[in-house]
Amino acid sequence: MAFGTVGCSSIGDHDSPGAHARSIEHAFGSTQVPEDPERVVALGYTDVEVLLSLGIVPVGFTDFFGTGLNDWARHLAGKKTPERWELTDGVPLEKIIELEPDLVIASDALDKSSYDRLNAAVPTVGPFEKNAAFGTPWRDHTRRTAKAVNRVDRGEKVISELEERYADAQARHSAFLDTTLTYTWPIAPDYYVYGASDPRVQVFLELGFVLTEAVEDLDRDESKASEAGIALSAERLNLLDADLIVAQNYGDERDGVERRDLFGNIPAVKQGNLLWLPERISDGLAFGTALSTSAVLDDLVALISKTVD
Figure 1: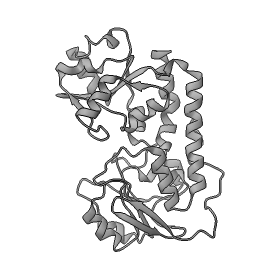
Figure 2: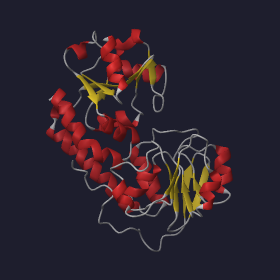
Figure 3: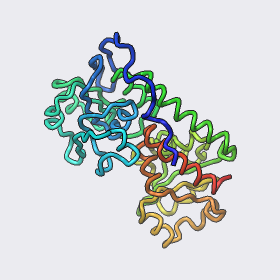
């Protein structure tokens, strides 16, 4: 698979050596960050990959999936083995402070109380929004992190490389343009559909797809579907109908749907326009970084083209 060059740019590691401490705005105020931080903690769920794409190996990071660095990110850490933790028992404040970082990046996964305690010990860039978890647009995530660690030029390179790949995919697959889409995770007893703020859906929008009016209405009326999605009962699965239905699958979901023939009466399914995503692609889209998207984009486009082109 072609991984692209995200995270492997030849741009110098740092911007102007004369750059001074910068102020980074976030949900809890603003933080003055060091000129060139060297020991950075990636506390947000996916911050580790943004830092790696900028050429920084954090001293510690939140392990979102509980399996360490994803396969597409491991080579960027080289021989370094940063500390890692999960957030099942909350933010490990003491462990983070023991690492003696000079900066903590927390694009999500941090409440105000924990932020106050952590920021008292080390400069901490808080979430984009209060109580945020996932859903930060990848460009914003990359740009703010790059500013915080004084690698703005490299951040723009990361963004432009992925944008070029999106543009190339659109040029090669004109059938994607304005084709309606629904993205679902069918886990009984609820069957989730996701709106435009979800990072997985955003990848398809970048490729030229559009959401159906039904999903746009649901997203507006029932939920902002950036995290949990909109739950549909089995009786409302007809709302998934689109030119292309994309279903996230980790093994049991597809078996359950096919065993009960839950999608059988949806017109798109009858026409063969249902795409089940392999686990690795599902993971790459869920992580929602430029690095993870770049790792799975070629395989994703190839799968879509077999259904849509």
